[in-house]
Length: 433
Image (cartoon, rainbow, N blue to C red):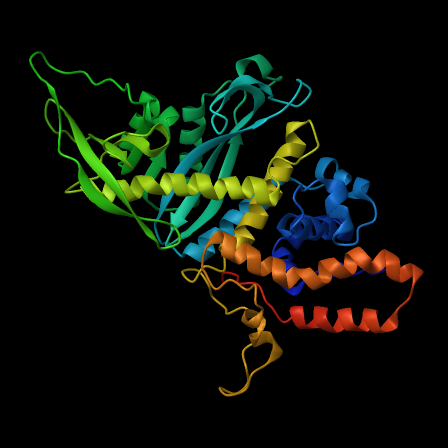
């Protein structure tokens, strides 16, 4: 019996991470394509189209990658479950802030499943496109992806589909995460959910603390004779994801009398109340929360910022398939790449990237990555992506020039790249144990 060959290696840190999911792919070619797409999504190419990605890890046929995304015998759900199990291991029971967000992508025509003329939040208007509801976690300056669900408009329902609103999808996500055993110390959501009575009731039923966005014209029933009053503006320092601080202003809006649910107005300028810098929110956080609610609500914009990077940098909207089964495969592959970027956070890190020296005074090549002049010592999502791209550069550059080396065989160039790639392979993935 012929023994199956081993998968062609890429970079050590990518191979180590992908190895955790190898059993989910039925053949070596599918597993290789999974690794190649992870490399491509992490790469510096602007648009993550399959023809562009195919050039990076040396895959000569983009049709093979398309077959992997659209037709290969693997399933999205087991890969999602494997990723969530990794987050269970990494978090080890620690609570985090859950953010529910929706995003949309403009798409032409009606060929693609669930594309319709609908409100696209990041565009701020009605457009032809696809919308999804997404759940992210926030803990100690990191963001990490959890679950996504596509919104299926009434006009585009397929056989067997059931129409569900975006708040209903958000509740489903929370229920799934609870079944997994994740713990939330708070829930953040935008006004589509904050204005939904069913969504708010679902949070109350679970006794979850929340900070929800509401519209400026949000109405509250008042008893006869009660009035609406506002407290004085109070400044507070908004702590940004990179540790920097910016001054914001907050005031409470009291409808008659203070209740369990309280209402706040947050702005960058209390005099002009700029549209892009002013937010209304409601919360059931207890105690003196004037400043806590401001920083907690600010995490929502941080998530939106992080997800924008996931879309722009990892290729969320760059799929070129029309059926939703293939699209959700693509989105899960993006979430896998996003997870690899989140693991190196100090709060989760279980192993220092690179090899440890045998002696305290001994330095090995694996300890010198940070000497690169473009290496970024910060702990944010973009910092990690920058550094991983630096580690991938020799491998990707060699793949790009390999066709020329097949024409002009320059042995010193080959051997030089091989030596540099070997050094890059001393960089290891930070994985949960």
